[in-house]
Image 1 (cartoon, rainbow, N blue to C red):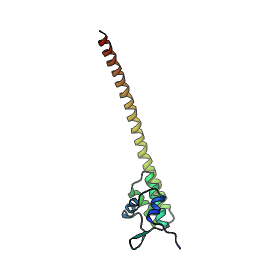
Image 2: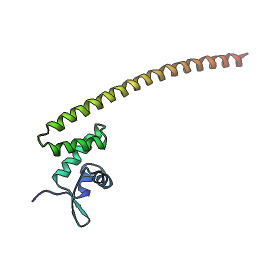
Image 3: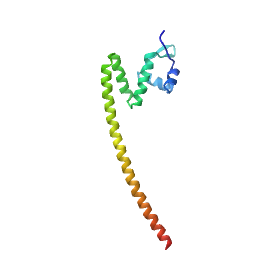
Image 4: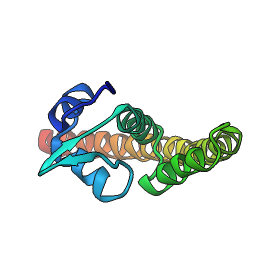
Length: 134
């Protein structure tokens, strides 16, 4: 008999809500079988959910994740999927490098402005102290 999972089991295993699992199903990323109103997830759904979570951790959109999973369905050898995944990872890394540089530039600018403001404050406080002594 094939291993199966309930929605609560998968949600608990991946530390997400059942609503999130249903959302991925609504997006076409998961396709459980049905027994009346009950969803029955198989090993394929569990693997796909694991891939969704990994993709989300990498910052991929659900659309990108879905495209990668669709490639696997079209090419079980995984050559096409792996090639596309490498391209997606490289693009994501490039975008993150740009963001990292932007953050470093912003932090440097903030440090410079903070020092200017602190110096100006110190000057003003020194003037105020001198004026109150007169």
